[in-house]
Amino acid sequence: MKLLALLAFAIAPLASNAQSLEPESCKNALLAAYTTMEAIPSSVAVSSFTRGDYNSDEIPDVAMLLRPKSQNRKQSIGVCLSNVKIPVLINYAYVPNHISTKIKGTRYDDYDRGVTSTYERDVITVNDQVCCGASYILRGGVFVEIVDSD
Image (cartoon, rainbow, N blue to C red):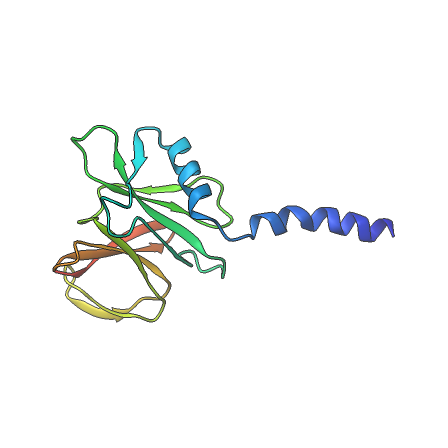
């Protein structure tokens, strides 16, 4: 009986970390971590947040558009990854007025590198809904930009 109680006590923190993130809790964590940023209202951006499994742990993560409180800097992407306590900021996002997710296995053309491939995990995508956009994929613990719509 003691072993069962001890096992339940040991597993409880893991279960709480494995819960999927909600956009509102992600926004609060991002704004607390990056005090010079603010959330972009949905009236300004067509889509202000998206979900995907960006770190391939089978738990949905959240990404959202942020803008600096001072108007002389570019917009960014804030990312809350499951099982990671501190949210990530992708600075100077490529034409970010719409954010979405492309799922693992989606084919893409990398215009900067001149290659065609498929995404090995879900990616965060931003675009201007006309011609231009880029995706951000987590590789080696860092989000890498791929210009895949130009």
